[in-house]
Amino acid sequence: MSETTRYHLMGIEGVGMSALAEALAYLGHAVDGCDLRPGPASRRLVEEGIGVHPGHDPAHLPESGVVVASNAVPEDHPELEAARRRGLRVQKRIQTLADLLAGGPSLGVTGTHGKTTTTAMLGRIFEAAGADPLVLVGARVPGWRGGARLGNGPRIAEIDESDRRFPEARVGLAVVTNLEDDHVGAGDQPTYHESQEALRAAVARWLRAADRVVYHADWPGLSDLVPGGALGFGLARGQVRAENPSLTAGGSRFTLSLRGRPLGQVALSVPGRHNLENALAAAAAALAWGLDFPAIRRGLAAFRGTGRRLEPVGRLGEARVYDDYAHHPTEVEATLRTARRMGGRVRVVFQPHRYRRTARFADRFARALALADEAIVLEVYPAGEPPIPGVSGARIAEAARALGARARFMGWDEALAYLRSTLAPGDLILTMGAGDVWRLGRRLVEEVGSVWR
Image 1 (cartoon, rainbow, N blue to C red):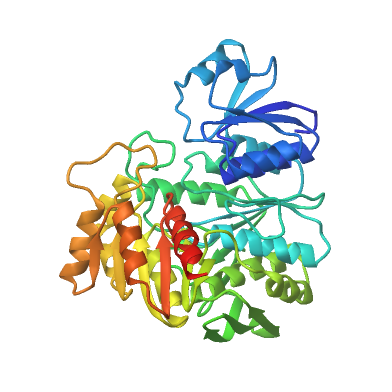
Image 2: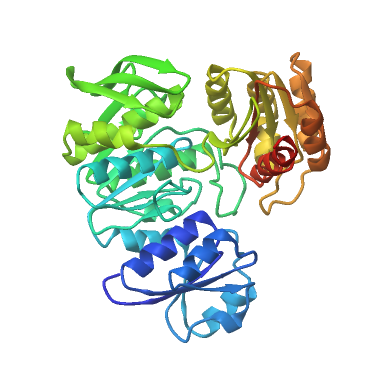
């Protein structure tokens, strides 16, 4: 990727694609793109000189160069077919990311949970070390350009394990946070692996291609995938440990140790055991890279979270509204356990993401949502998947009620009206899911807030 290339990105509004567009432009390439629904990210890109076309049309294609498509764009899309007829190189996002990472020293983070936060934490640590990293993550990060931090130093990226081609994104230092049975068993879809065994094999291939490997030593089964000499982190196992951890409503503290030697105390301002483990992953990767402890401490202290990870949306008097991206039962449970530490009546509005995931995990979602004082379950956000007969958000709500939980299945407008009429001081409203449920929390704050003011 050393020569200047023209790139056209389809689906450029997405946080991952917009971050990639900014990084490519920063590295000197000519970049434009298109999207069915251009929004805030596209407006930012236009302000930075990156052209964005509304909709998809073969007329947008360049005379030469590379067309990059997100996995949401089908292979038989007319714009892609026209690009192939013209002899343009057509790539998926992960392939372009692989090219970018090959252009310099690189680190990558994968795993079912925590990869976005861990990658952003790593970026903050490298900033604190004065390393001027280029960082790409799948969420907005305060102080960065959306999901991109542009720099001339090491290249750090979130590597999405759901993409079956992710092993192509080779890195010098590979981090794996955990691995569960998500994105498996869906035939030839690009964001699913054939089986959990196929996913594990793909992760093992990716790790073997790296020069150095960091992994969660407490996570069941991960040690079977890593090559010899890998650096493990954990609360109970591994060479890098968090000793004497203390969790509070606003964050955590722990002593970072390396091979039994205390390095010093770390303070986090993001709550939850899962974030403590994310910080430990980032610290272990930084140590494996050769950074010193003061940079790790400063970088983690400077971390203020990422978009849609228990993100504050607004206050309505004494009630608070948060939003979270959790869309797997493990993530839902971790986020709700953290929310309960924050005090108040926890009321979650959960939007299941994808029919296959809902069918697979309906009972586990119900058990996780039972941790809330009240759960409102919306209909499934399909993310391009066709409906499956009998699979609905109602199935999760019914299973939660069978466990004794207070759970309701509602439509979008019904849920909004219900929250408006029942909101009480001390409530913690949490919108949750990987779809567009975040809009509901913002509407609640805008509509109710205008009345309460």
